[in-house]
Amino acid sequence: DAKTTQPPSMDCAEGRAANLPCNHSTISGNEYVYWYRQIHSQGPQYIIHGLKNNETNEMASLIITEDRKSSTLILPHATLRDTAVYYCIVRVARAAGNKLTFGGGTRVLVKP
Amino acid sequence: DGGITQSPKYLFRKEGQNVTLSCEQNLNHDAMYWYRQDPGQGLRLIYYSQIVNDFQKGDIAEGYSVSREKKESFPLTVTSAQKNPTAFYLCASSISLRGNEKLFFGSGTQLSVL
Image (cartoon, rainbow over the protein chains, first blue to last red):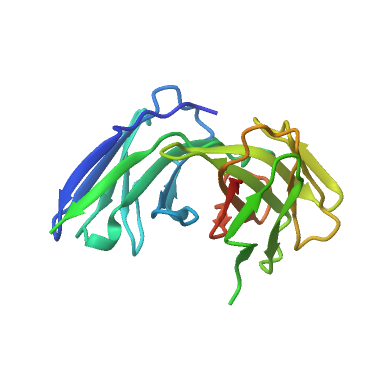
């Protein structure tokens, strides 16, 4: 599975959009981009995933560049409860592609 | 409510002792996983299971053992051979092992050595 690179930390103002970048320059054509987040001392929570097209759900939007080498997770109106570590992961959709390992992620602090 | 239940929330191990962490799911998922998380670090895969009576080693399986006798249960034993067991342990499940299906996580067990 392709490796991802994320900034270690970022701050965001409450009520503003938070844009979280992820670099996956070695991604292959059959690998999905997934985002999870982990609030302190809890299990990670699924946010969103995509293959080629931009995706949106009730939690966030995922923007994938045309060459698929990078993506951005957008939290449209950050709240204090969005403070968490956000993980970007790429993985293939074949059998056994789900045995993934999470990297260090981006520690997001939403400030009042 | 459907989900994954891990117990206990906190567990203490004495030197030379084996301890078992429980993970139960009622999501009817075939695949289950165990991850270890050290402070400030990401998650590392210990073991995973694709189906009942089958399991595979992950990246850091040494000092750990698992069983999958029932679809809904995937207990993890931390043996005395694991010399640095203090960590946060997370269990997860998914419909199958295919990479386009999302993982559901339990709330974790914090294991500490006395």
